Length: 76
Image 1 (tube, rainbow, N blue to C red):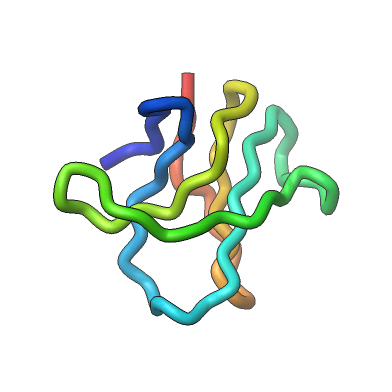
Image 2 (tube, rainbow, N blue to C red):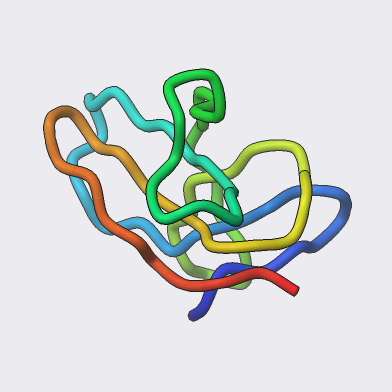
């Protein structure tokens, strides 16, 4: 599942630990700036676990879980 916008939420597939600090950033830059990270929460979408935030701009989607940061795709 690539990042998608559904029901006004930006959703990213998530299969990491339940008790983690999770943030999502959407940016057009090489890497997100500190102010672009938004806290995400876990939910279910079509029987898949997702991390989600309110939908934002289009661009590269980044996921930050505890100490690890990874680009997970693009949202158009």
